[in-house]
Length: 455
Image (cartoon, rainbow, N blue to C red; front, top):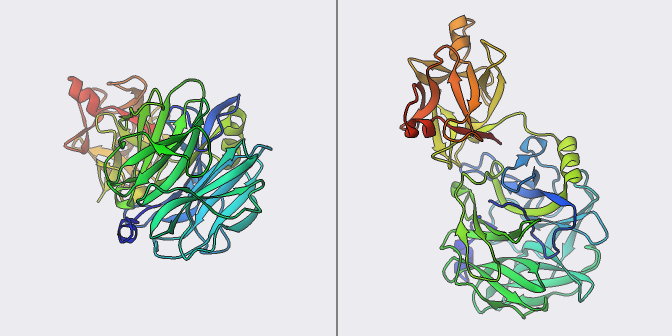
């Protein structure tokens, strides 16, 4: 959940990974890819879509949004919107999808229900329903499910305010249709939010956001019984982060902790790495290591097989646009603003300013030209060595100015650089955050001229 500081502190107030998991069951043999579910927001509310979006990844770092970044499922009852989706693979096969029943940012709203769907393959969603979790005069936020083998049931974990503060409650179910009565699951004596459960080697881990100091914390227990967890970490990060996700590599003992910023104004996902979840040792990942799906908020991540990954990509399709990340400023993207080209820190609005279609070069089909998504009649071209966004005038000069040869990244061969078609001794680079073409000679120049083409 986001933007709850004022409401909760009256009683109270991170993307990366090599491989992933958001529920307690371990990745199944054969899982070799990942699916992310999320809703979207952006600083000026341009991207606000309170519905289920999906993205896929083979490495858990590089995400491909599906369905052109549009929703794949939207609630039809309750508030008509969702936040904080969760995807869990069911023991019997297929998936269940849960979500907070809330659209927008009215966090004072009481709601005892959550959204639920079934899905055989995440290509279609059936059996839409709302589940009533309790009768308390409060909210039901950030539902997550985990399998409890000792009970032979799933636990649905969520945040609700009882006893004057937010704590985690749980309802048990075998089918995500009929749920048992709520039980208090975790209450450390202060407001907590966004619980996520992960099990490894017989130990159960519960990560959560504390409103005492704004940090993400981890607790653990030898059982999944309610009120059995004891905090074992000193707090991973200070203030402004929530929605933890604990994820484990499918093929090795490496973990990642994701966190989400409170506000769409700073709407970013962050990530930390650990080589041993049993110890309190998390190291932040830099943003050259991962790229979040565009405008993604409070995500869920579930391991899937390579076949499921390929089927999702085939069914929903990859975007027809790209975003380009700066090598030496990896939190910055190439964008246009007032017809000038520059790099700016993500996120920003209009977010479409950073979306490009890399089309065959206007002067040579062996090159590429950058066509704007939100101004499709305009292309990036150089003029006086500065890069601008302009509409073609039909001249050979414009076509040449707007054409670049894509080559291996000058600072990192796994990234990309772009050489000017008609000034082949010059490459596209940023200088003072503004794009231009220049001769490249120093290591700093090479870093300025290297970009990652992604989504």
